[in-house]
Length: 247
Image (cartoon, rainbow, N blue to C red; front, top):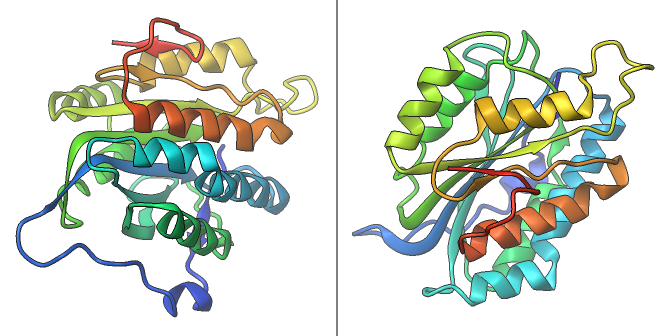
């Protein structure tokens, strides 16, 4: 019951990201793995969400947060997932070390064609797939974060609780972006907002400074992603729990 993106466009293939330098891994302030899944949402909703992520990486405040890090650079990748064993890399690990690199990443993300991966919602499988991508891009992050967005509950694949515990044990933080703007009365497959937010807090997120950033309207998606990225890039502890946080 989620939205996401499937295929790289031809333009994407013609503009590959800058690889990490040969030799020892490049140290970065953050390795950020952004994910989305593709089952229930229509093409328009997917395009809206894709545009939200692209807009965030063009945002001056996000770029400023990257520059203010100790090293002034982060590494980002983007993954799409759905049911069991249905996860794939949409954009590979990419170094973002300033405005030009951030805007280039946003432009390539904006050219991705929205896709559809069905067969349920296997959050445990997705987290397992994502956790194994860290350390494989030629980067060594001071912090490692998985963003998980969606509009429903895990219903297939590996046991989410066990996978989450293993991911957190590896020192990886899982943050959540629950999409709670659908009307549960009009769409019987939609979970009430408070129920979905609570599920993400109690069952999905974990690790140091983990938090949830609910998206309460389709139009609010870009602003929610922007706030989330700034908070993740800064990496500073926050006392508030809304966006909700969990140790």
